[in-house]
Length: 251
Image (tube, rainbow, N blue to C red):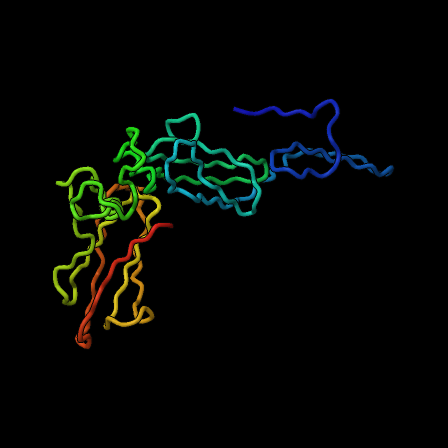
């Protein structure tokens, strides 16, 4: 098996700039000498870095796209959402594939995009309009009169229209001894929520509370309602140890 390559009728002169395969011919132009040679010149593209941002967004009826960053910046690329002809609209999990579309660079990245809901889109689906402008859809209102606000039911992933659907405890621990685990339950479909876990030896001012890092959602194995287990270490010197979980709107 072999490949035959030939020069075009009007070969270009000069030094090539772009990545690719070039057939090169050199010819002596000295009046006292003759000679020529041909060879292949391969210019390989540079490896670029590709990052996918904004993989968690709230569905609002409009198509949502991830944000792509490249190093170097400004390199063109193609985005493919698995099983779709364009960016997704509805809530769900969508594999995303990025391939650079530039002659002098190569690079790719893949990830998973989650379209979830905001409090506004969630409550609108749970408490339909039905022509009632005064329906109880505020965060501090209690639509089903079960003693829990709509916002409490939102981050607990329960139904604010059903009094039998009641929020559960989101922060639990079995024992305050070394080696035990503390569990945090997180509603990953609620895109606009931020979870802040903190510990302290004293129920005092806010500056003595230490942040405990929570891992981001693993979109490689997405779970709508995720139970996160963390080591809860208590030393013999600890007279007492307190833990609190804060949930706010806004990522």
